[in-house]
Every structure is written in structure tokens, then in C-alpha cells.
Image (cartoon, rainbow, N blue to C red; front, side, top):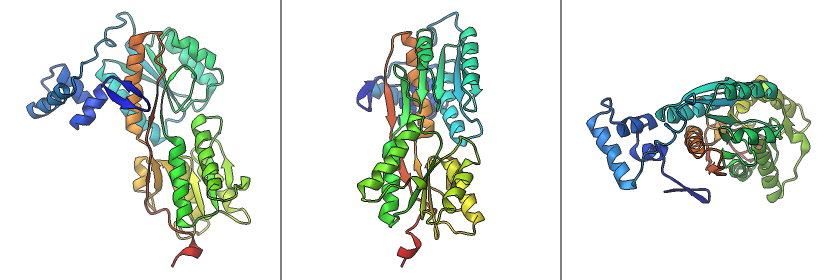
Length: 345
């Protein structure tokens, strides 16, 4: 059994893959006796399986013989690299169980999302994963739960199993880091606070300022739309303030990249004139100019955990599992942060 966030769950393919240092699909092939995997790798995986007493879970694969063998996934923005990494984790796990993935790019359009859900029910999809979704009518989702498996990522729906990162702790660590550097004027740019994850990050920003005796200022918080150029537009507003911030915490890395563009447009230097922190640690964060300090969340692992949980969800039918998996975050310090100008020696 593996432990996580106050509950125990059975060992999964993902757990065995992590301990073996191989992919989920490799573990699946070893279990199924595939000739495609080398002898050395096969023996390594088999040793981990024996050591952990892992029992392969074939129940989901044959649970509904007349079902479609498909899993549906709704995402708000297919252009965001964050979701691409999540999908990679989801797809690798569900493929290892013999399922295929159907994707809906909702663009945060609830009507489009609901139309897709109805189509998936008609096509006998066995499960749906909701990703970063604002659910205006959770009762609809709970009724769907009686017909098929449902798991949410970064979306809290009462009665639905969920996978998320430690949003509050991640922002708390980032803001405290800026304060320890000497920053007292810290901006925050985000999208809708109706999403609980965003709201949690906002509360962490506000609480950490107050905990350190720093006054919270409404003008330092800008809320924009969930669009690619919003980080740029929100940062422009902050820079136009009579007393602009010396540091900005972005709600995600894409917003942070927009901030960098807006700051460079004003002929300001990062981090000499202003510091920037993102949230996600997508692959581009490491190669941006300057490399982005960001809160890293285990994106691929979140996708794997959600897929494993959905497989269990399907296997148990209408019976609710009611689990929330919260994975840890970590601040990754790179070149986009430094003490404010006046405090440098």
C-alpha cells in the first residue's frame, strides 16, 4: 500500500514505474509478458513487483465488455504546455490499461463542455476527467457519476475524486521567498478566482503578506481572462501604477512569460528592476530569458495519478471512492528573481 494525503491506496502501475525508473507502458508490457522489453529491464521491474507484493489490476480492462473502451478528457486550453504534459501522463496510464483517450478543448466554454459530455455519454465512454474546469452546475456531474467514472484535476466537485497540487503552500513559499529577499511591494496576476485552485493561491498571497506585516493592496492584484496574452496585459496595468510593484507573482508560467514581455517593453530589466515568479514549472521556464523562478508542481505525475484513480473509479462503478490526492509543490529559484534594487550591495 502507498500513502498519500491522509489515506492509503493500492499500489498502481505508476508506483511500480517510479520505483523501477521506467515508464508506465514498460511496466504494463512486462506484466503482460511482452517480448519488446529487454531481459535486464524485465528483471528489474519483476523484482520491484515481487518486493512490493504488487497485484496487477485487470478488473478495469474487462469490467464492461460492451463498453467503448474510451476515456474522455476536457481541458480549457490546448495551447498551454502545462496541459500537454498532464495529457502525456494521463494517456500513458490509460493506454496501459487498454483504453483510448478522446479530448475536448473547451476554451472555458461551459456550453461546449456540456455538449461534449452528452456526446461521450451517448458513445458509452467509460470515464471522464475534468481538468481546470469551473462547474456551474455540479449536480449534473454527480448524476453522471452514477453512469460512468469521473475524476477531476485542479477542480473541486463535491462527491467527485480529485487530484491537485498544494496550491496554497506553493504560493506561500514563493511570496515568503520574495519577502525574505527584501520585497515589500509584490503584485499578483491571476485569472478567475471562481476556480478554487486560483482562489487558494490568491489567499496564500494575501495571507503571507499580512503574516509578515505587509499591507495588502487591491491595486497590486489584477484578475484577467484565461487567455495567452493576459499576463502581458495585466502586467502593463501594474507597471502603470504610480507606485508599481518591485516583484510580481504570476498564477501560472504563461502569465509570467507575458509579464516578462511587458517589462522588457518598458525597457526594464529582470531581475534588476523587477522580479518575476511563475507557477507550474513547464519545460519552457528553464530556457526563458531570463530563466524563470517558479513554483514547480508534478504535472506529469498529476496526470498519472488522475488516470490511475479513474481506472479504480470505473472498476468500482457508482460506488464513490471520494479521494483527494494533493501532490507537493516546490519553489525552483532561477534568474528572474533578486533583491529589490535599493537593497542590493
